[in-house]
Image (cartoon, rainbow, N blue to C red):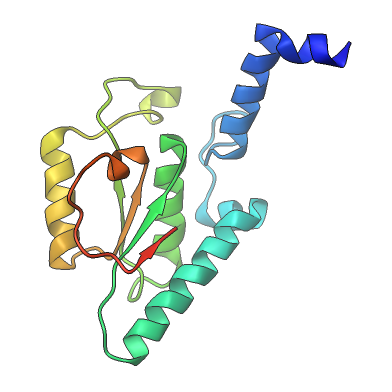
Length: 154
């Protein structure tokens, strides 16, 4: 019975939606969660902050600059991760989003939007110059783009 249930398209669709909700920075009614809510509600976010701060503090202590890339499976999560990292230690962590192109808009017109090629290039240029040191991206960041030297990938 369980095997039959798991094979039904409606069940598969529900599982995908639950997975997206678990990795999203929106609550059940579509309100955006605060950076504090994200770290409180998901231990992955807390660990991400811990790893990044430790990495950047270690490099800062020896006088080296560093850059990192954080991959997120869902583009909906990228904005929340950037907001959460920005609220942690703004002098140390300078995150920016980097997502693929899309003309979709989702919930309240905020979810699912993408970056055009010109916006992507501007972000990459600023990342290369050191204006940002953490690139939070979807899989677009691994699709053959020349992102430059990075010391940490999460």
